[in-house]
Length: 327
Ligand code: ADP
Ligand code: MG
Image 1 (cartoon, helix red, strand yellow):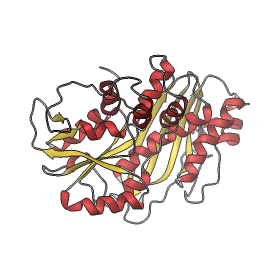
Image 2 (cartoon, protein in one colour):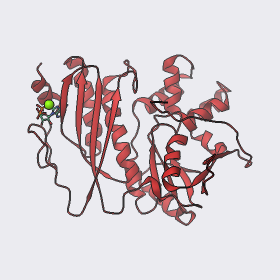
Image 3 (cartoon, rainbow, N blue to C red):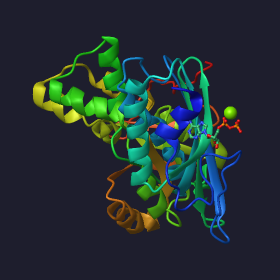
Image 4 (cartoon, rainbow, N blue to C red):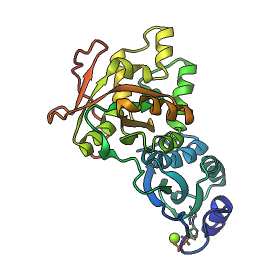
């Protein structure tokens, strides 16, 4: 199978919305009048972002999911994406499930594959997504205000637990592992929640490198600090319920590590004023996505922008590092 056969067979689809899709030198998009384009790229490299053993359908899903998660964090509606793919060989047994996993998620979000590039090389997947958002309504990292509530969506830490099981450093009961593995391999981009939070949240980011790291980006951009209640945060691990019911499989400190700095969650962390609590609850209901209030924005202490407290308000003195590829 040659390069162009491959593109035709696996990556050429009708594009009812885009003016021009795959097949010419450029794709053509027509944003709706007055809309701003939201654009983001994310690359997945074998060995760095995923294990070589991950099922190709899951990899296709995840490659797009991590990009849609960036649109979600901005409150943008997905429109289209491009796919730049380096592949060791044109292997139908890999391309078929990969493209199915990718395009199923694309269809679920009405996000059209409009172009890309295909080359031979070590497996590397780079997607650029395009979304649209009304002017002035994008959710930014820079809008958090002192006194705002701090929220996260969904569950945190389970992707990290699954990674540790794959690495052989941890074992989990089968049902807990299955759930955690789904979080690692098939993350759910919170697009509906991001859209519902327009005009409600003051700042937002998606959690790809761990809660503390990504919250840190909001705090720096907004010039504020935050206090996080670890007794609430730890309950965000879906596997926590299993931990409780099956006895201590491993310690609470480790679970907290996974929640605060595990990475690969693709949930949203966001802020909103206390007066907007009902509006946040309504947005969560509309998006059918649970959210939890885990802390508050406060004025910034240069040496410790994030204060961790326990359920009684006492300081939790630990350090956590988010995931930095060059640290
Ligand atoms: P060019 O030579 O202009 O870079 P290519 O020959 O690489 O174009 O690609 C031909 C067409 O196929 C272009 O429209 C390009 O956007 C599209 N394309 C190439 N690879 C992919 C891919 N992996 N997924 C979707 N479209 C692709
Ligand atoms: Mg090319």
